[in-house]
Amino acid sequence: MSYELIIAEKPKQALRIAYALSDSKVEVKRYAGASYYETSFKGKRLIIAPAVGHLFGLQQIGKGWDYPVFDVEWRPIFEVDKKAGFARRYYNMLSKLCGGASEFTVSCDYDVEGELIGYNVLRFICKSESACRMKFSTLTKSDLQVAYENKASSINLPQAKAGETRHILDWYYGVNVSRALTQAIKKSGSFKVLSSGRVQGPALKIVVDREREIQGFEPRLYWKLRYTGVLNNSVVVAYH
Image (cartoon, rainbow, N blue to C red):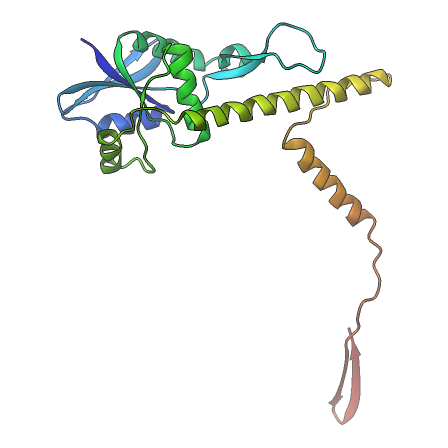
């Protein structure tokens, strides 16, 4: 029996959506060590399955440590980041569930990152770029039901592409500048991995400039207060 697969951004979000769209009961199921939820809403079979944030990350095509490098591709995050091994369970679960779905709905956060998370799951795991889109600002039952019953017929592709562009530019800037800095210090006779990035570099520049202003500050007298008064029939003068 086919079903509609609702893709959530996080496990807790998937749980809230499942109970909000449940006519009767919610079945908690597991595959590959990850949990998903099955229920029905107005007689329609639904499966709500979560990602765990980004399931894909950018990686250089080929090997090497030269720069500039502009050939990158999306890869499962557990292949890009050694600390993200837990994401493999959700990747495998979604791969299994996508195969039996007759339609898809993205219910990730309605922002640039959420759109990209859902878009990558669709095109790389579900092998489809066609899906409906739930839009909500809270996880209350009423808001989620309204979002489902009034879902858009497609994802916000421009927003997803905007998110993808930001990730690519971050990669280009961060990796290439970091490699240039590291190789420059290596040519001086020492070795230290230096990093920079689209936000990190300018932020560090602001901090350094401010610290130099502080270190170069020369204190000088700007103003002085003088108070003249009478205490016990004597004139008292105070300075500050």
